[in-house]
Image (cartoon, rainbow, N blue to C red; front, side, top):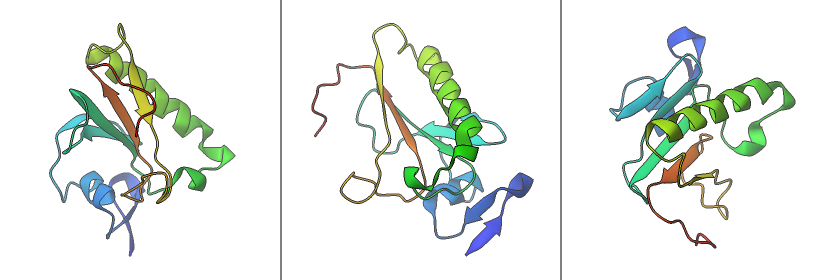
Amino acid sequence: MLLLGEGGVSIVSECIFCRIVAKEIPSEIVYEDDTVLAFKDINPQAPVHLLLIPKRHIPTLLGLTEADGELLAHIYAVIRQLAREHGLDEKGFRTVVNTGDDGGQTVYHLHFHLLGGRSLQWPPG
């Protein structure tokens, strides 16, 4: 079911990330503004593992349009800010967007993983 959250942001009641945006499910939020929310992953794969999500429900990367260019630029600006705040800017970090079942996406709300604080090998898995 589609609902309107704070500020008229569309949320899907069955989506765990939409429920985090609506503050129905607690999370350790590290950044929030009108369009983006960032919080610590509950199953971290690195010493720093943050998830950045648009507050508007977008199921996958494939749901983005050219009109979302400003949103994407903002998300990457927040990633840059959080990488610096968490001391990842000097040694490096990884950003990951899983898309679809074969891409490893388990929550169908677009999200960006920010991982760092250890050497991240390639290939990832």
